[in-house]
Image 1 (cartoon, rainbow, N blue to C red):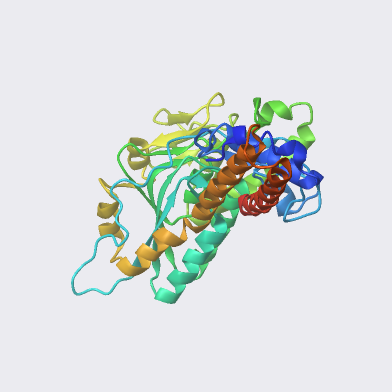
Image 2: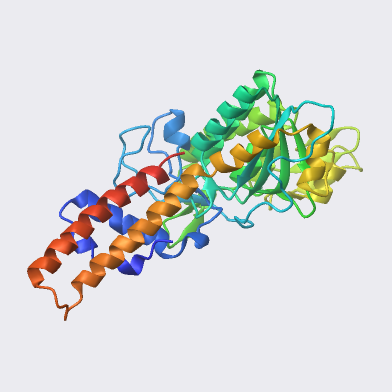
Length: 396
């Protein structure tokens, strides 16, 4: 974890404005501890236009004033965060190879989606790493993919990219199944694109409403834009379309996604009818009112026929197919590749910042000229590492 206390002395020395911004940004973002922002969905508000990148390339782990990867408008606006749930610990009960069956060839692969969606914390996964996993799956010949989801949410651009990939896999004849241990916010919306759900004991799915945060203050998206209903409607229309389409593609009602995302949305379940936004008759069960945001538990997911129950990840795997242990083991490594690179860079930044601080202390036996040279060297190395870190953090 980056130690912002070491960075304060370096910021004034940077001769280039970009490096000063990078240091200030990193000290602000990580100084409170990565664990404090883990599992958050961070979204940079769109800066106008109607392209998907403007509206949904969101996560605000971006230096103020830097240019986004998708366009050339500066990302100076406050970040948007969907509130954290759960933790980023390793999945419980999961084994890379899963269960197998003698006499049957492997047809399935397990991909663990653990930690934040996007690199918002010390443990997370990116759309790039997910796509690398899918490339390996396609080469393996397996046609069933199980996503073990244990995530409180994350970046919306990462979520949308993974949704897009999953929907594309379904069109190619793959079966994609979500094994839900915890799926909050963006992770819940990824699950909407999967063909089937298995719910583990104590699982939760939902709570995908958006809030805005500048690092110090947090406000709901609804509240922030209440004076500009046109802008609010524009964002909600574009951002919600992807989730509604994921529901329709997998045979789920779009009202399910709306209830997870919008406080004003309502959701009822009526036996023999299913999910609707309005009460149908006396047997209709209200799941979400216009005063709440929908989160479903394992019991509800099973009772309302949204998911099948499974005591463990391995039990769900037994139901899904025969898992290729070698390929699944690679998945567990590939999906965390960029997360591990970020951790390594953060450690390197800490060490270089501490080295700079050490060479700045008075009373050293070394001459001032030599200490100045050593400070300059640490500063240059630090700046390069920090730029590499920010580039990684900007990857969906």
